Length: 326
Image 1 (cartoon, rainbow, N blue to C red):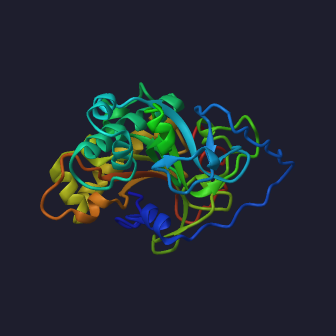
Image 2 (cartoon, rainbow, N blue to C red):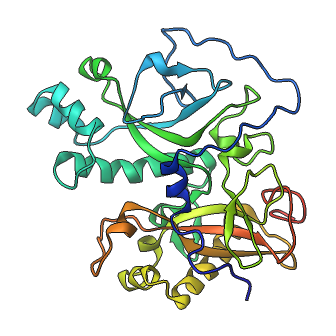
């Protein structure tokens, strides 16, 4: 059975984010549209882009054209059911400060984080047309299924003045690990797998002879590409999470069998003579603090990768070269 070294990717996405190491910006291969400036009174809407690296709250001064380098795309708006009662009971500034700067484990902000994690994941799936998707009888919502890429899906509030002025909507955003620039005005996050979408938004690797993976820009030859991520607790039980944490081969084989099905459901078939799918755990805080107990509210991400057989390199696993959709 084709498979990379167990847990070869564990922590790769997180380490990329924390290291501060950015891949080189690609050189444009044709005419690039010059972005128009954003008017100060422009409406905040799905598709709005921001240059801010920190995304717990968005400042209008950071709004930029999506044709300029940016770290944040708005993908939807949701309304937390508890928001209005919480504001009515206390001080709007205090509520904003708690919800926009919280990283703890208890209280109102903890409930907010758990709710928005699922609500904003749903916003991303709806934007991609994945909201009704099921894999092996499990809904994409329950799997927390998302496309692979160099980003996280997060929740963001208006800036403090806007929140205190009554804008209590939650902005669901994609936050890029490295800034992206859209070369065409019709591209949005929904175009993630369009060939003209910035290659640096995707997550690609090259396997060496021993099976270890090196991060590789997706517009260069590579052997592996992350196609999906999912939450292990959305599919498996707590025992699976513990076995995966111990790098149990059977656990990773189970995940790889699921990934074979999931990638086909999300993207279509591929040439099985040249490609195979496999799964591995990705770094997250919950994996890091896991000891003997699994947090039932935790997030234990796995990645599904599509890979070439030994010795084969291709320019892009998304389309072409006998890959997805062939």
